[in-house]
Length: 193
Ligand SMILES: Cc1cc2nc3c(=O)[nH]c(=O)nc-3n(C[C@H](O)[C@H](O)[C@H](O)COP(=O)(O)O)c2cc1C
Image: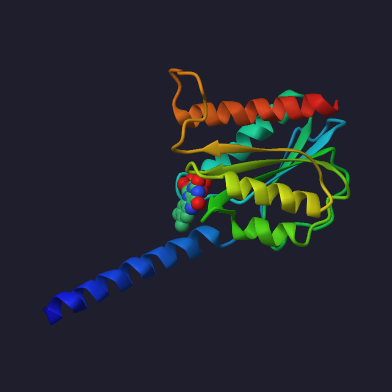
């Protein structure tokens, strides 16, 4: 009996330690990296994202959104969210923020960044990524973007597991998410041209 209790305690401790390690790993901020695409256009967009550590969902969403903005004729700077990301935003016509959901909240690097940045009234869109339960995180992202002085256009949700489309399609759920992020980029750019 006593051996069973000890085995149970060890198992519980192991599962808890694993959960804490995964949580710390996925929430740790990445290095600051930045790339500029089509650096010769009149209109400029900034796309900020916290890279996801497993399937790279948010990375690909940020790329799909970037592609949409490029198609619509923008120069796009795509950068990671970290403590080195500039906190005064000037010279952009649009800012996009791609964040991951962990425990029903946007990831910690996004939260820290949005508590110090000033968007100076620039138009902003949020892309809230997650497995399928992102409504609470999207609400917080809306609130934090407004608090950071962004002129918020919208926050859209993108899912790995929950269907991203209402009507049946031959495409995978992942492809549908990327198509939607691309279209969001095109439409956002078109709305301010
Ligand atoms: C510890 C942990 C907590 C998570 N919590 C949520 C959650 O509350 N809601 C949700 O929709 N997805 C949740 N997810 C899924 C992540 O949001 C999703 O995997 C994320 O977009 C990262 O993408 P990746 O799988 O490409 O790394 C969680 C994932 C982990 C590892």
